Amino acid sequence: MNESNSANISSNFDFFSVDRLIDNSVTDFDLFINLRDHFILYSGSGYRWSREELTHLFHAGHTSLYVRKQDVSKTMMYEAIAKLPTVRQDLSPSERIRAIEDLGAKFTQCLFEGEITEACTDKAKLIAQELTDCILEDRSCVLNLGDLAGHDFYTFYHSIRVSAYSVAVAVSLGLSDVQLLREIALGGVLHDVGKRDVPVALLNKSGPLSEPEWSIVRSHPKVGHANIAQSILSHVPREIVLHHHERRSGLGYPDGLDHRSLLTEVQIVTLADIFDALTSARSYQKRRTRFEALDFIKHKLLKDDICPNAFRALVSCLTA
Image (cartoon, rainbow, N blue to C red; front, side, top):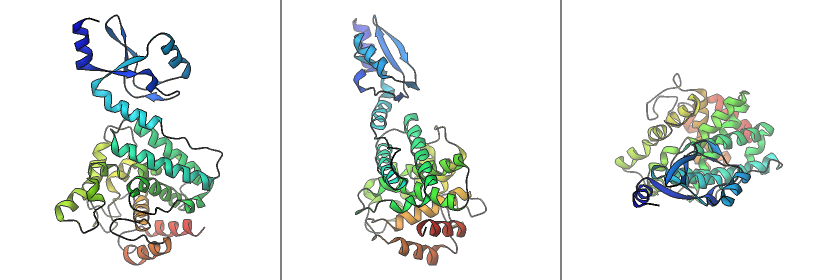
């Protein structure tokens, strides 16, 4: 390889070892092969890999491909997503929802630590689909969501639990469109994506927030909405990400919308978000029981902030 081409590798490309590719996975970045000192596109974004092709590459002596330097962060997210465990479909709904809960927590950790890529949103859609199918099979499986002993992993488990409660409430309200239920689930999975840009120390602060700190926390819906701006997501999950902290009274944030402007799907996720926060151990509060959380919502929030129909549906889910 001549010096100019070596310089080209150094300035524009990074090595990508073929053994980093996973059977039946999809890469959402371009990969190149070096033939006679020329870089030729081997696979474009959206390419699905098979074990047969990976074996062929090794036998042909191509142990490394090349990726543009600007796509290196995508390769890191690809590996993190591709290595996530699969959920066994032969498990009962009560067992399966616990497996989905753990998968969702691991996924959220990837989401918070890496770039939001096409592979990332595709995985979120798959998790939302599996969660919806599980709850449609047995709505009461949400009673088997785990209890967190401490607040350390709250951020990672919270979103998938909100997603599960949201779908259960939607089903209890009589929503039967499977695609819409999956969109609600997806919105739940992604609703707090904007918190990836909020310092962890701030999220876990045990004392009251200062006004500047509170301003940073309150920015997460708009930040999250901006983070998914380039993703192929429908209107419902986008609205959930942006408006899950709005209140029916119009006193929420970021836009001060009231019940006349809020989608029912958004109001469902708002309730699930509050309920899971109340029933989880946080750095600044003790964990409430489900009954205590429902009682708090009924007497403190139901009049002005929470959709009454959604609240009744949540009660129905938890007493089934």
